[in-house]
Structures are given as C-alpha cells and as structure tokens.
Image (cartoon, rainbow, N blue to C red; front, side, top):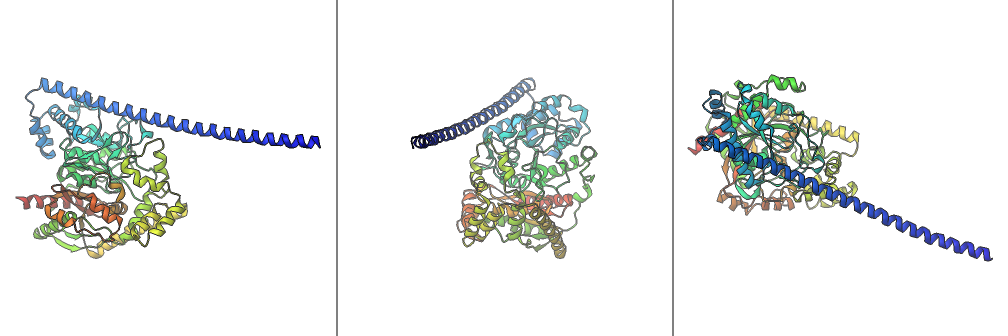
Length: 587
C-alpha cells in the first residue's frame, strides 16, 4: 500500500513537472516569437531609414550638380526650355539650337523643386550624369537629349525596384530593363525614379518607405496610382515624358487625377522584360507598360521610339510591329461608340459631363457617335477582373508584404486578405441583401480555389474578350469614348472604392489599348450636382465615392479613349482628335 501511495505521489509530481515544463516551453516559444517580431520590426525600420537616406543623398548630389552647372552657365534659359513641348524640344536638340546639358539640368532642377512639394521621386539616377557626358554618341536617336522619368518598378542597373515593399529593398537589379535600354539607344536620358503604392495593387500612391505622393493641383488630394509619382512629376512640370505601367488603370488614373495624358498599349506591344510586377504569374488581367506625357504627340513619339528593331532584338517575345505613323496621322471620320454610365458605378458629375461635351465636339467635327453598353459589367468586373487579379486569394501579395508595416492607404484592402475564405464567403452572402455589388466582390476576393477553377476562369476571360469584340463589330464602331475615374480623391479613399475600377480595369481584362486625355476642370455646378449624387446601388461604396471626390473645384477632368487589340495607333489618333477639338473649342 505504501508503494502504491509513493507511486501515485510520484505521478502527481511528474504531472506538475510536465505542466511546469509545458508552461516554460510555451513561454519560451512566445518569447522567441516576440523577439523575432521585434527583430523583424527593427530590421524593417533600419531598411526604411537606409532607403530614405539613399534617396536624400541622391537628391542632394543632384542639387549640388545643378548649382555647379548654374554657376558655370549663368545664361541658360531654363524657363524657356521647360515650356517647350516634346516635339519642339527634340527638333531643337537635333538641330543643335539647344544643347542636352541645358535641357538636362533644367529638368533636374525642376524635378527637385516639384519633389519637395509633392514627394513624387524615389531618387535621382546617378548614372544619368555620366550618360549625359556621352550623349553625343546617340545623336541620331528619336529622343536625343530628352530627360525621361521612370516608375520605381522599371529595372535600372544597380538600383532597387522596390514596388513599395521592404522585401525588395537592398536588392539592386543587375541590368537595365529592355525599355530603359531602348530609351538610352534612342538618346533619351532616364534621370529619376518615381513613387508607387505599396505592392503596386492600389490606385493610390503611398508606401511605408517613401510616403504619400501629393496631387500637383491640390495638396489635399492624392496623385492616384500606381504610376502616381509619374503623374505628379509630369503634372507638376518636372518631367515632360515618363514611363509607367498599367494593370487596372495605373497609368490612366494618375493621368486623370494630375491632368496629363497617359496611354496603356495592347499587352505585349512593349517589352515587360526587367519590370518587376505586382504578382508575377497572374495571367487573367495583363499589365502593360506605357508612356505618360503632357500631350498626345509626345505619347506617339515615345511609342515610335520604343517600337524599334533594338527592342524587337532584345525581346523576341514582342511582335516586331513598328509604329504605324500613317494610321496615327490619318484623318478619316470615325464611328465612335460612347459610354456615359457603365451601369455598374455611377460616374461623378464631372466624369459624365466630360463625355457629353467631347461627344458634341466629335459630332460637330463630322464623326458618327453611337451609344454603347458594355457587356455584363456586373459579372465581368468581380468574377473576371477581381477574381483574376487575386486568383490565389491574395496569398502572393501577403507574402510580398511580410515584414512590412501596412500602409494606411491599404489597411482597408489588406484586412480582407487575412479573413479565412469560408468566413469571407459567409460575410459576402450576408451582405447580398444590402449590396449585391459588394457581395460579388467579397466572394471574388477568395480567389479561384483550385487549378481546375483557375483554368475555367481563364476560359471565361477568353470568352468575354471574343464576345466583346463581336459586340463591337455588331455595333460597327471603330473606337470607344468613355469616362475615366476622377476627379482626384481626398486621401485614404482609394482602397475603399474598388467597384469604380470597372471604368479602367475592364480594358486590361479585354487587352484593349486605352488612353486618357484631359478635357476640362471641375466646375461649381459639378460640385453642386455632386451634393445630390446617390449612385446606382445607393450602398456604402456610392456614399464613400461621393466623399472621395468632393472639394474638387478646378481639378482636371479627363475622358478615356479605347480601341481594339493591336490598334494602338488608332487609339492614339482618336486621343489626338479629342485633344485637338478641345483646344480648338477653348479658342
């Protein structure tokens, strides 16, 4: 009996020991996790500080170089240079009436000034000063002596392509991307990289590394994104030509917000080799690099320069289709479809007015305008665009953001990515009576779920493209006039209004070329009409959109021009016609 009692007592001791050991192990594990989290936070903080220091150093070196040049060239007329359109600037550079040094330093100085106000640059490229010294070797290039700004994710040798992510800091690329190589061959001087949103999948322009980029026309508004640094720099006068890329409106939205021109070519028309994408491997909604500039002729000249044998040689996956100048310069009357409201998201008063006014100008000029209704937007946007972009349920995006603080502009979007898929679908189901639109988008955020479902999704995208092309042919339209998102938003709203991307992302899905032309500004009457804005669904999205675009009097208003795949020159020609008629009407 005594032995049994001792045995029971020892068992109780072993239990206590085991409990203590388990508690100790849990505490140690928690301490390790906490230490790792703190260590990761400190490492991220240090990386951010070093990145900001590198930017500050590059800007200071550029400022010192400008001061030295101004001291040795006191008669250089920067103001006159900065007012020249690209077509005249290139002509004077080729003829020798302007020298590349004066042009380069005029734009570097202006960029430094604009960046100080708008926070649009991630760094001046130090190699640009060396390239300037050897620029005479490329005098025959179409862009000889032209300073060009490039978006952060364009590969430039020995520089980071961060995409606004800490994981990409201190990972300099080993060589220039193809488009940068072609720019250099054509005599252009890439001289500055511009800001982007965290992870690129946002139409704002803010990240934890470099901060918020501001609109050049109103410092209380965002520049838009994801090519927001480009939009702000060009809109502010610090660059006359830049390169961005567009996966849901990332060229067109900042162009609209900042009052510049922007063009998204057919996917595959320009090389993407060496560009860092948001989520590599996503194939449903394709990204396109493209130019941003002050006017349409500049966009066309950039496309002409890039579509050359050198690019076709560097990237054989690009079809060797040179720029069709004859089509761009044609003057045949067009049969133009027009959309004032896509039936999914009611445009702001200024967006709709811009389309009506341009429609009238085009009709007066002899073009035929016919109303057009896009196919099944309430299905295509959530099921094909949103689900296609996030086919993996957002896993890749979340992995890319590990170790990074979440930018305030993205917190609303990212919060949904952490919700389990079953719960997301349940929440979406419960939202259906309140907002069918949010129900559909919420379900799409869960992604495709399996490889067979992904293949079905790809097939559905193909079907939608063919159906839309057939619909255009049935309507016998050459091009399409439609609204583009605008005017510029107040801060921290972009992540809360996904449905409005139906006006831009649908053309990424369709692989149609599309561009934006500024045509007006927000009027007092637009603001008055906005007070009565209800929206189509009259849900939370419509209420938030009304708040986002309020207080925009005087801000730029643009329209969007669209063409069929591989009809890039026709799209640009249509944009040029719109630009010309608007300028003519102002006279």
